[in-house]
Image (cartoon, rainbow, N blue to C red; front, side):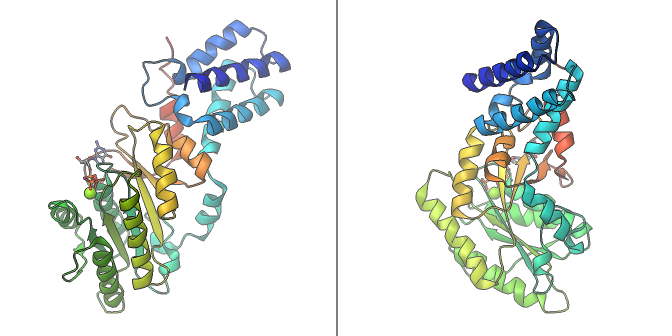
Length: 334
Ligand SMILES: Nc1nc2c(ncn2[C@@H]2O[C@H](COP(=O)(O)OP(=O)(O)OP(=O)(O)O)[C@@H](O)[C@H]2O)c(=O)[nH]1
Ligand SMILES: [Mg+2]
């Protein structure tokens, strides 16, 4: 990690030396110390080192271009340039296309791409991730959000491992004013999700139709091959029960996680193709900087952030606000 930091620092210094865009290198390097919380060990979880090598280099390239083009001359310019480069790293190209095609049915959650299910509801959203990241809580909050936007929502209890998991989800259904999907007497997670999806699809054609089915899954370590294979099977069950499903597969990432986020995202993405990320627990000291590396490397957009344990503590992702929190105005390496 230190290597990445050093590289980051020296790349910038090299650029400045070569371009002679900043006269006083000493004040420039001081400004870098100010700019980059990564160089200050007090700022845990907001470190540029967490971005990972590929994102860090991409960001350096962005800053370098601004220096070369004369856009970044002062420390303040450099800070803006750095922030712009991180914002750019957080916006995969595919997201722009998605935004253009997002249907009106998801207007309260503009980043969810549920329009494909307009003709053949329900839209099915599968939520995956490691243990305790905030999957069930995110589902509860998302349900309330979608409901507030006028959608009829049901929840599927695909976490069959923890005895209390279905109860926890049912609690969220009650809080959010949505229904629990009926999965009959199914026991295995893939069977529960299959039955729940079939039920939701059948209900969707009736008067009290279901627009969106949110599927919970058990937390699992991305290193557990057996459980990852089981998750892939759950995904296949959804598409068998309802063609086109899942319309969204969201990976929930605990914002306090560092570089391990990348490994988690890679493994989950290869088991079930991910369409979006949710970064949780950003209400604490964590800033979730490591997700910059995930977006940059895998091209999967962040769609929501979790900022608390209450029902309305889910926000659509705002790259600029996220980056402002990573590089706060007042703080610095003072
Ligand atoms: N502060 C804070 N806590 C959160 C947030 N999201 C979830 N939590 C808490 O994190 C803990 C775990 O949340 P769950 O939703 O149960 O996590 P999970 O991923 O479903 O966990 P498993 O099903 O056991 O894998 C709970 O105590 C939640 O209240 C958040 O955005 N902020
Ligand atoms: Mg859970």
